[in-house]
Image (cartoon, rainbow, N blue to C red; front, side, top):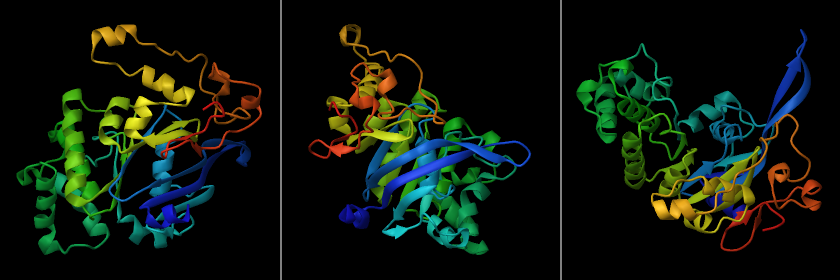
Length: 327
């Protein structure tokens, strides 16, 4: 573990992020929402880790904790070996310039009153990385890097298409030359034809600039395409983590199997004959998660031990980790 901590771009150890639930005029805390509950993983240099799971499972919260937009309830986040989990805002700001973020909504994440050039170059001004004389030249470089025409720098966001807006968001994320980019569902709001273009752009930029990605998404087929390793989350916990090819060819956790069974296969005969796993019930509330394995209320394989014992994420061979006593 110590080697992983030192060699990784990001090493997340026993991360917990609980949000208080308050009531009354005095805002008395009556409960906690366990958005992220004891998560550990590492992202190595030039690697892409895909983070998948249902809405509300804690994927975005992990990304925001790594960016230190949230202060974790407990646990540690190491960025290039430095523990950033408890740093003050004044201490985290110079470190945050080495991180970038691409958001889900390519329009809602852009200031509609600013020009495209100002949006893409704002991080350069905030971190004082360029003077006013060289600002336009540096922004023009960013535009060309993401496939936008520098002549569009004076336009405002509503004059761009959805794909162009997301390219603008990518340019902003890369402005300070980060080593880590958090991609928070960057393609889910785009047309299918544009999604492929953005994914190809991200892969080209990773190869050209040596970037490391945390890729948060719902689209399992797209995650398989772009990711080196994939982590599957359920109710605030990682239940399976493996190499992308290994996970899709040999899923071990019942929840992973159910997710993959819902991915369409572009072959009518195979699609018609394959087994479809339908999960019963609803995802439990993070206000009151089940005792033991969080997935046991919906699992056909659950035994008495599953209701009592919380399974730990363990390596079952070749770096394939799973949190299931039946695996």
